[in-house]
Amino acid sequence: MHRFPVPRQTLVPWLIVAFLAVLCTVMAVLQYHWTGQLSRAEADRLRENLHQGLERLSSEFNADISQVAGALTPPNNLVQQDGREAAYNRRYQRWRESGRHHDSIRRAGVAVPDGEDLKLLLLDPATQSYVDSLWPNDWAYVREHLRARMAPTANPPDPRALDHTTVIEYPRFVFEPGGPGDAPRRPREQDWLVVEYNDAYLKRTLIPDLLQRYVGNGAGAGFEHKVIDARDEPESGWDDSTRLFSIRYDMGFRGRPDFGFGGPGNGQKRQPRAGMERAMIPPNMGGRWQLLVRYKGGSLEQFVAQTRRRNLAVSGGILLLMLATVVVLVRVSRQAQSLAEQQMNFVAGVSHELRTPLTVIRTAAFNLKGRMSSNPAAVERYGNLIQQESERLSMIVEQVLQFASTNAGRAVREREPLSVARLMEDALAATRPVVESAGANLETKIADKLPMVMGDAVALQHAVQNLITNAVKYGTEGNNWIGVSACVLEGLPQQVEIRVADRGPGVPADEQAHIFEPFYRGKRAVQDQIRGTGLGLTLVKQIVQAHGGTIHVESKPMLGSEFVIRLPLAPLELQDEFAHTAGRG
Ligand code: ADP
Image (cartoon, rainbow, N blue to C red):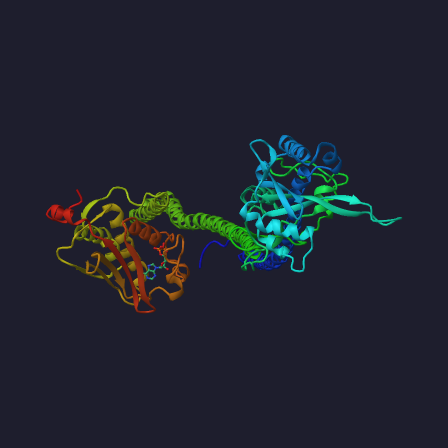
């Protein structure tokens, strides 16, 4: 490479990129581990939150249903004062007036001992009062169960028979003296409030509302839930479960808290009131139902793994983006550096080329001014020299201007259908003086009936001339043969191929990739001081490419070089139309 040397630290930017790449990889590995740890911690936290939320939900649910019974059972003094029916009626009416979510009850009644049997006062919602009724068929087992409580038998009915229903009986106790002296007072069941809960309301309204309140929306993913019988075995895939529907008699009666559910709709967690001992209801202590909960779209593990994958993808993307930005920055800065280098080479190359003819012209002018002026032969010689060198100057200036304009995207001015044969003729005619003065032996082989190409005749002719001039300049040492040919290259698509060959020393293999670069000059060109700017082949390549064609060099050391231009043909319809004119318009 023979160019104006511009100091550059090529390695440093790439070392920085490599360092950053290593850093990014280390960060990515750390990130991978950290997100793994975080995910595990997050999974534990979510599991714990879910568990605690479900425990609170269970307590709240059980408290809510117990409180309904508490609200509907009158205190003993009221029963004594007003009578049983009136007392129960008043409690019910009060609950209707002040309580909420009355849909939680489907049926209610009061079972009253009647001799050895039990009579039933069934609630009539229309009149809001309990009326003497027959036992409904589906409450038969309740009756059996209570009869056994009144008079224990050898074969009492299994109390678990109630477990698959939503019916619960609540006894009203009266404390009777335990016996003589300080014997403890014994509670005795007076009658039973029988409540049949509305399971549709509990499952579709109360539980979803409590879920929303106590376990939230599951870190944005939401929850799925299912209520099954406590005795059923749940299928796998649920993240957690809790037991529901466990009645605490003390809960319903001791504190006599609010009437009915405080729950759905008020949006706030209720504070336990004094005497309620709400927190005393242990969750999962048993219950008729089992509530199963899982994160939507899979289990908690899947949810956490998905979140982790998303986090990793985002942070990996950011790291890659950073790396890509650095690579782009380095490339851009290297391009800017190489542009600066080209500009320096340009100035250096052009100045160098201008200096030689200018020196010759100045010397010739000095000589002509002096004593040589009286010598006509010397005047003619110096005159020729000045003319020659000024032509050279013009050529250099012309080449530089052309390079500037092709770089600005104006390699081709006007495109028109043109005859390749005519183009070759003109190029050969224009270079004849150069070829002849070098004593080169020019052999031409232009095929008959060459097709038309679309292009700028001046530019293409300039390209071919440039190759012929180069062949004269660099390829006539040792062998003065120059071959110029043009033919049609069969294939898809068809192309016109123009070859300019010489049998000179050729282009060294390591220079072949560079000779089309701006300002590049071969080692021999520099050593032998062969004049040139290093712009010729660059211009040729730019012109050919602007015509949609290609150029390459085939060269073997000491066997010569061959420059090959391939150009696309003009469209078929233009071939016939212009074939006869075969001109450039
Ligand atoms: P210049 O002729 O001004 O040096 P070019 O761009 O035309 O610029 O050529 C670039 C380089 O390619 C030349 O310096 C020379 O080393 C090499 N070169 C071009 N043509 C030939 C050829 N026919 N034979 C050997 N080398 C060549």
